[in-house]
Image (cartoon, rainbow, N blue to C red; front, side, top):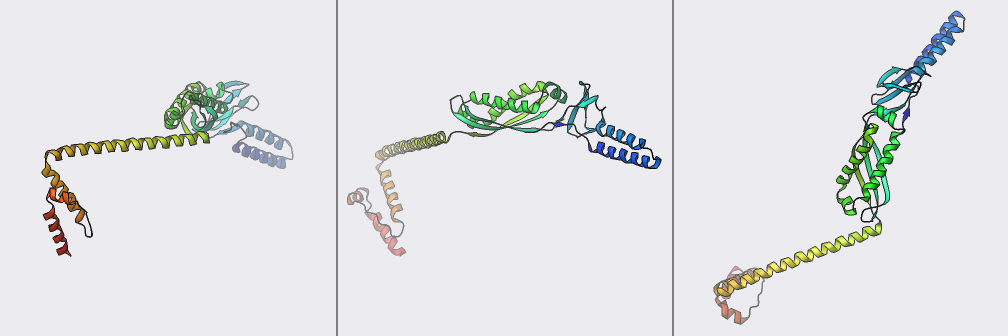
Length: 290
């Protein structure tokens, strides 16, 4: 979890303290009076605690005797020690919060473990500092609660197949809750949805059975289409015997045109379709080719 930084002594403040202390020591050495080093040390201490530096992506609130007087940063600024204090530094960059919900029931009473990532940023440091005690903890707890509530409103199939929809719903819920705090939630991504191993095996068997059922249905439809085609062909051949003979001759030719092929044809079929001459011609053709 990201920590809130408290304003501390800056590097410039330390450097000024050392310079003032050295200058006081030089003055004391030159004048033989200790006032120089005392004044230098006092001035150095004041500058060390008065000079503050805020980085480019940060903001900090100044409180004068406990009352808010304004924001400072980025860059160098000055405060009056003891009378003025600083709030925790607020990072305005996009930040990431990892949230998870374990053994949470979906709408169809399936226990799931869900991991999500929340991308958020502070758009109003003043509200963020004055309205919420610990905004980082608040955003994490709110995200976890919203994730559990959203899981309870969806079925398992929806959570697995519609992760983007679930993420958009969570983003809208969190954004409405955190906007008064000066925080906006940019997006929520569902990283993982885990279910119990026993249920996962049962779902795998169910999916396999469903695929087998679909395969059988497709095979049955194919058989039906083929049988219908045979019925149509039989009707055509019944009305045109010559076409049937030509089809038989073509099938026979396709069967014996390869070398080393042998086809056994009943003599009645040969006499009926007049294939004797065709078979002799095909045999002579094969012999000449050899």
